[in-house]
Length: 394
Image (cartoon, rainbow, N blue to C red; front, side, top):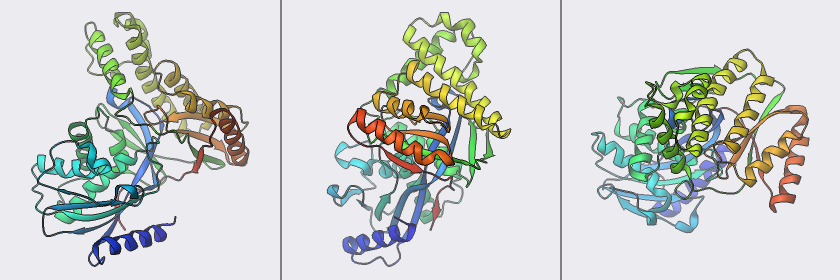
């Protein structure tokens, strides 16, 4: 749907649920795709994501009491979900998706901002859910942006919105996530990706010049749930490897290591599985640094090669791909004109990101579709994407 069509749908549902939409406002927060630098954010390494022009929309109106009333056009079977800002303390499974906006309200309270009234809210997302494009982080940043606007919290910066979103996800939702998703969504800028050092939070905007190429996201349509995945297990494995390395090296994170340092001291990591996880974190960090250098030099072939190497490492050393993602990537690599293909996001399902010569985009879509359908039994979805801005009131 177009933005105007989404607005019209939100208005109709808002009027149906809440009698009228007088005084309601529209808001948007993007999703994101990580071009390279996967599972490095919680390891103190570099990432290179960009915000997208698809994301999460909300129509919101203040209430005079402390009730929160939520409705999602994407999950209409859940109906209207009610809660109270005074009762938000921890993740409640029966509250479903509304735990995410509720967690941000709770976080603002924890950070010293009194929340005195609730909202009526209808949301719609044109991001595929549980696909690795950060639909949940989009909701977290969106809710923070809404609270800042309605409560006139001008002292809360966009970086604060990212930090509060991460705090909410870690402390309320219970997911050991990194800062990347919330940061790029809060700080996105059209036609630019962000080169972010997650260890220091230093960042740089890098213009994306891809004339003659198409950035294509392909969804496995195999949803993932990070609560039920091995994501937290990977975090723990990297933490264990780091502790072993810290017995011989003065490092704070795996991102502090060069490839050469890791190779020299890898033997001190006792568990061979943890050793492979750490190898990915270290090598992926260095790949990301090299990939940004290549992109600045307009060397897209090197950038694409590093994307491919990233996927191989995620498949073999980090083991977060699986049959669906591997099938998409292998099919993409078979198409002339594809210079880079890799899984993106946490893995365990979700999406791939592909750098394709525009002249080959049609052949790419047909080949990948046919191969995937034949092997997996259902079709993938394709999203030619553009790089967009951060959250906004529309």
